[in-house]
Length: 411
Image (cartoon, rainbow, N blue to C red; front, top):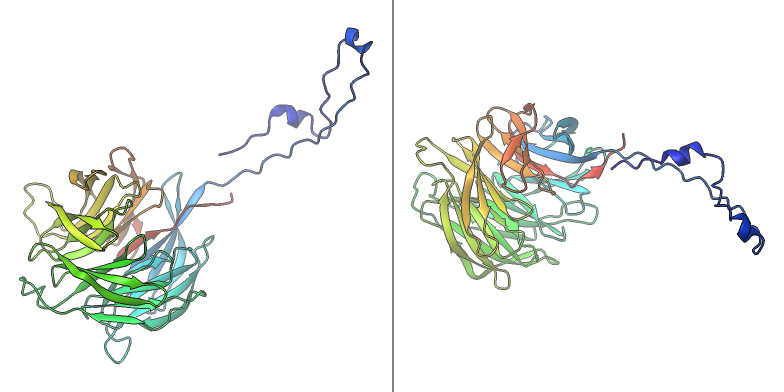
């Protein structure tokens, strides 16, 4: 908000403000009032509009600028390119440290080390300019890592290896550098879809708000596996019970905790559904509430949901549909965690792989992987519906969107 110096002070600049003169009748009884000279208030500097740094993970070669950086204008909803970083093969998924000073990315490859593992890379960030400086890389322990996240304190990075069907925990130093994995767990088993579920495929991994438990959605097993976390030691231990099941053949892909910590959702890639769950934060257990389709009635084409995220207010949850090429919008009952379909928003491109919500919940940015575009939407806080703010922004093979908290930018 601009602070405008009153015209009165502008006219009196360099002069004092004169105190009111007493009446002549009162002058006889009281000594004259002294003139009080106060310094002229300095004009308040004009402030810039709020902006946010946006990080985009893509599929790209190691020598290419695989992580793209933009500035999002909170007033207009427009994106301005700021550059990016190279050095990582297929940095398809990125995650920001809670302190905003470090960014982490998977290297979705299978040749980072002699064992056929992928990579996890660490970058130092400049919250003002968006400039990234690569710090180091470590092995993810398994092939084709596709998702990563951090615990609430930022002590550890968790990575899900899709190709390897495994998960790992890598400690983060105070300087942002990654240490070798202190925990590695190989998932085992299969499910009913012989083409996609003949073996485990860990597809995401998320810590709860208290940093006590970690949940990994495994598409190949139809399970949400739960682990106890010792954040100080970087250790993961199977919980009791060790998992919650979704419907056979559903293929859970991504998972998200509700902001109130009592509910969660999983989006299921193979049958285009979203499962709402009740979460017991004291025991680390999940129980299904309901499962709904992510598609409108009557749709008969091929579709594979990808990302799922709660609105920061907790009033809505969004899921991306690759095939229908839309974002499914659901309302959330804060009392019982039930979902209700609000509608669908076309992403104006093909294969919306990932999307990101601004911390304030004002904006959503969708990444259309096949048409190489980012689309910015403004979010209606009352209904959760979306309105496009401007033209598409070109980015080669975008996959993941992370929006950092807003900052005041100088004009």
